[in-house]
Length: 388
Image 1 (cartoon, rainbow, N blue to C red):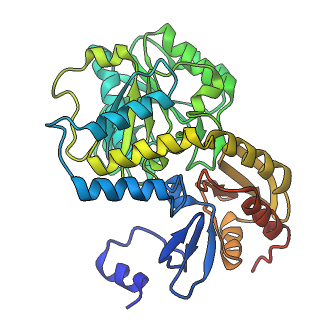
Image 2: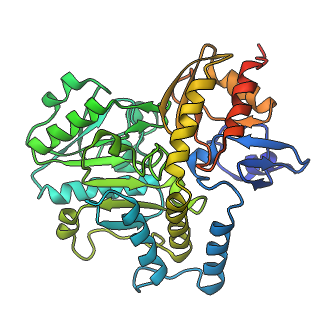
């Protein structure tokens, strides 16, 4: 029985899947049972930060697995402390504390909880941005644009939410008053099609939040960990976020998530305010530490910025009319439906993704992707044969 048939028989039918079954990986390449090699420019939804055979990541996880595969937060562990230190040192200096969880949605869920804890029970509303995606858990989906009409499913949201149209600077001030606990935004909206919020808009959101003593939450689940050309994409706006969430690239393939906070937020936390069984487990911690170290040691932020420039210069060709996004969270705007372009690229052994925008191809490759890989993409786009 094929993998597709096996999954169809034994898993819930909630994922549309492409006609490709990877067996192993080398660098940014996926390889199937017939040794077909496909260049992965989607990175498993931005997860494969270091590619698929990074020796340091493999060694660190293997060593930890052999030494001690799991222990909870009920005991201190050196590897967890090392991971927290490495993540804090990667981030801007005002973010001094980390909390580890299992996913991006869980990171956002806890960030929102902290916002209401900081609001001392009199703050009742969150400001979010149109077209945003923050996750599928209760609070995260409550601030996800359109989830109430598509898949929210719960009878009510856990708090009030107001949306500001993305990049509408003139709408910002009116959305904020004293009952706002926080504003949450993705500096580059991933699911929406790698849509980069303007610097002016992010600055306006942060300024309005400060005026009403609300927190600034930057959702960096897709855009963080060096992917934008800086450690975190909100840094491009020159603002200070109170809480930053991370996941996907954070573990390079090991499931994990985290939030970073200021000391002010840490000071309001008491035992039991947040909790997790698997968050900060030793395998995830070993992976997080290694990914953080690799980003710094190999200057992967600079590589992301250089590859963005190369994509902008060479990939507006064939069906692509424009480029948006930042770093290696890139959207290619297509003249024809993006699914047709994605399928044609896969036929030419390049894996890409689509998005909520039907005319955007999304690129989320490993941060280690090279110039030759982008040259291959540009050449393939220029000569792409689109099936009707």
